[in-house]
Length: 339
Picture 1 (tube, rainbow, N blue to C red):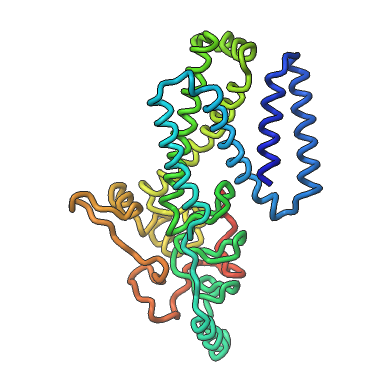
Picture 2 (picture 1 turned 120 degrees about the vertical axis):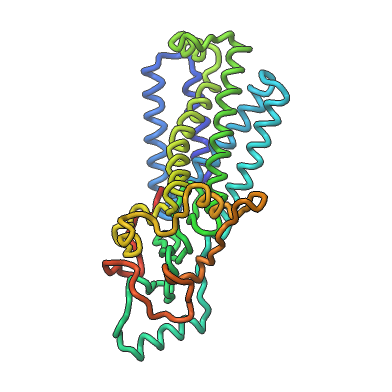
């Protein structure tokens, strides 16, 4: 699956480097899109197509490395290359933790599932709370958790399912996902810096004249410009997502799922739509990172894997007031889980 975006990226870049009219270039790009779209429909099923965003990310990143090595490295200082590689290394760490790491999957034991089924059978459905029970996992969901319909599992302190990393974002990998966003921003910024230095040093391009600079880039070497355009495109949506995530974590003290479905949660309704878990911007950040600062601030460590009540951390019983004001089938609290 990764081969298609990798090849498409290369062929599109080659089209931009061809010395011909732009209308012909756009026609060729349209033909490329039609070809790869047809191939995707014919060869890949729905499961593989769901991996397309992840494949696009990996392919784009691979061409970033190739472009830096073949074009940009000679045009920038050694320090710039080292900074680019360091940011890339940190990006890989955060990406792998977000992609392959455990997001906080709730794994009930066989005995816990049997106990739940027996209790429901003995009670005959009396007092059954579908909003706090997941029929797919056969488990009582902790507060702030949600069943992901894509991964078919319950995740503690569920934020969203991210197709760009191919995984849920939850309790155990949310901080790595934030690091992934910040490092991706930095890497894209270095690509834009390196590309601009390449054109200034190798092609004498002056960026104070935008129209003239675009013409000079097309006449000099359009490949680096194509890569810079992709870096700018990815940087734009990553900026928006980073701002949104940072605002929710620090200022609101809530997850994406809670922000989009807070009208359904009773513990949010009781606070007028505000998060009952927020403790102020500074303390929210400390709690999220789970770090202390010379003893001045201490994180409040909550076991969201086993925290079922908003008022008290008592998880010995399973008879609790529903957390949703409306019943949700299959243990799901809405479908707002993509970002």
